[in-house]
Amino acid sequence: MGHVMKRLPSTIDVHPTVIEVDAEKIGALAAHSADSTSIAPAIFIDGTRVEGLESLVALHLSSHLVPRLAGGGSLLWG
Picture 1 (tube, rainbow, N blue to C red):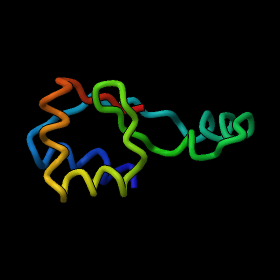
Picture 2: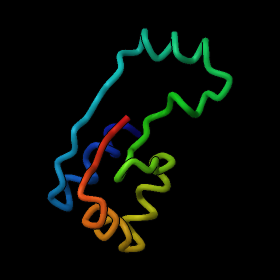
Picture 3: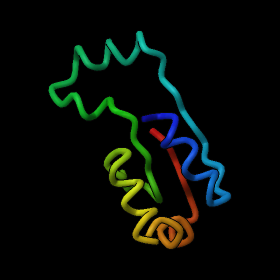
Picture 4: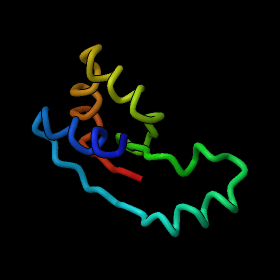
């Protein structure tokens, strides 16, 4: 899932800054988090979280991804 989330932007010539957290730290975060979805791979466009792979692909397939990227001028992973 994370691999696809990293590769999809490059198909539209966008090269995001990627911040990866190692598995040990993810486990520690999960132990302290009541909401396990908060540690799932996520993408942020102009400070707004896109909720996972399905939402990212839906934006792309509906032709809304490029306008959102162009409008915000930034692409951040978290």
